[in-house]
Every structure is written in C-alpha cells, then in structure tokens.
Image 1 (spheres, rainbow, N blue to C red):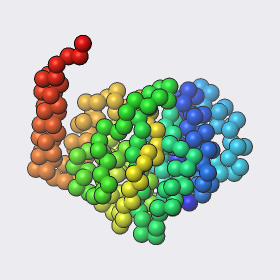
Image 2: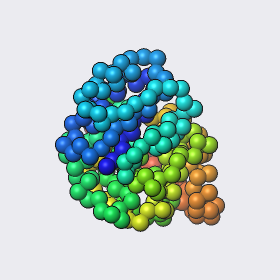
Image 3: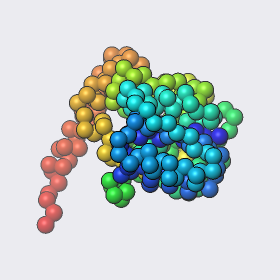
Image 4: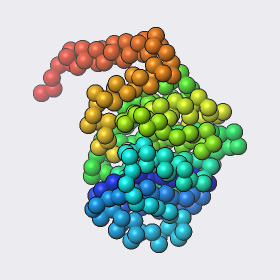
Length: 252
C-alpha cells in the first residue's frame, strides 16, 4: 500500500484538484493523508466536503505546525503504507493509471520508485519539465548534481525514508532524498510522467537561501572538495548556456 500525503495551508485555490487526482486513481491500494497547518480559509471545508468520496481511505488533521517539513514529518509518523508519496496542495498525480503503473513495477527489494515530473503553472497548464535531467539508473553520486528527481515524482519505502531534518527550511527534501537513495537497495525508474508539479514553490521565492542550504547539505554528504567540484561544473554549464544565448541571432 502507498501512503499519499498532502501538506496544506490556506490552499483552497489548489487543494481540490490535488484531491481529485488522487480520487481518480484506478488502483485503490493507497491511504490518503492530509496534514493541514490550521488553515484560515476554506481549505478544511473542501476536505470535509470531499472526505466521503474516499470511502474511508482519507485521514486528515488540521492544527498549527512549525513549517512545511514539520508537517511532512507528521504525515510520515501517521503513515501506515509501505511507500510514502508526497503530493502537496497544487500538485497532482499525473493520470488515473499512474499509481497502477507504479505498483506493477514494485518488487520486494524495491525501496524507491521514481519517474518524470510535468511542470504546470497556476492554471494547471504544462510549462515544461523538471529542470534537472532524471537519470534512469539513479545512484547516490547523481545527487551531486542537485535534486535530480522531482520530490513529487519519487516514492520511498517507509522503512528507509526517515524524517525530514527541520534545521533546513527550504531544502530538507534534498537532504531526505540523498539519505533515501543511500539506504535504498533497488531503485526503479518509470519512463513516464508520474506527477504534475506546481511551480509556485517556496524555493523559487527564496532562491538564495535555497542555494545556501543545498550547499551545506551537499558538503555534509559528499565533502567539501566534491561539493566545490560540483558547483564549478554547474557554473561552467550555466556560463556555456549564457554564451549560447548571446550568440544566437534574434528571430525576426
């Protein structure tokens, strides 16, 4: 069984489409957990209205928390499924058959299942793909390139997942994924979209702090030398892209 977990706070604009993407799944081997941070808008009303549609598979709570990752830790503590899948308010499971495809690829020694992320805007319209290239043979060393798997596109076995490090306010998902990949026995790649990822994330609004946290996380897991080499490669790649854009003649 998969524990699908949604974190919300004042998410009345986004939540229903997230919930309906879960409800639409043809595979019902899941429990659905919503952890709300004590919303003051209509978020809780939406949960109450839609709760009967899940026929006992939805559990939820609404109470103040200490931030996003504290709320996610509450979801982990509450979960009973073999795998954890975070699909937060505004994000969606990609298609009704997605969970069935995931379950079909899961074996006894599978600790991680992951796929591709379709990036959408506030209206739910596709605007691109996750900016990192998802490797089909995910290994720990790939994480030196950053969060190469979109957090909403990875399912981790609960027994190897651990909790989020709440010292990090923005990039704890990166640290969590590194630890999960390190502990995993077998990673399975689905060469398809598994989620729709809403671009309006906190890391986009606080990019400087995000980069600082990611540097410290990378240094902690891989050491200073490897971290500096990785950032040097990133800088060269960005410089190459910049020069390529400058040398491209403008279209008429």
